[in-house]
Picture 1 (tube, rainbow, N blue to C red):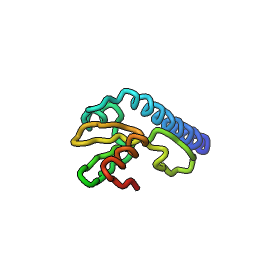
Picture 2 (picture 1 turned 120 degrees about the vertical axis):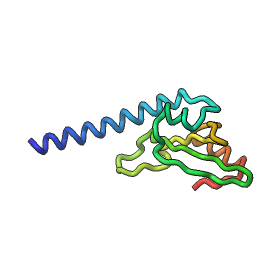
Picture 3 (picture 1 turned 135 degrees about the vertical axis):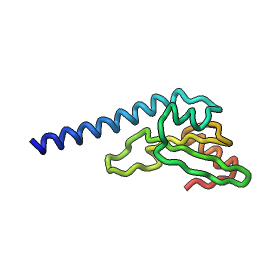
Picture 4 (picture 1 turned 180 degrees about the vertical axis):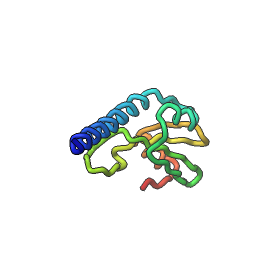
Length: 111
């Protein structure tokens, strides 16, 4: 009985993680430029992680949201995250191509 409950719990939690990633991907399509950090949090929830990127003349804040699963290895890698980039508290874009373009534009080093 105990093993069955544990199995059901594990399956349920895995399903929740999948639903959460799908839900987040769907919500990202509702993002709009110039949204405040709080509006993004209200829409997408708490980010998986945040990072401040310092450039030559610019400081950008990035919220990373978990939107994909590449390997079921219990490790969340950058390619499983979607970045949302803020400048002075306003959303200026999202996605890795946007982030790469701005890293070059503002001479920001991305790890």
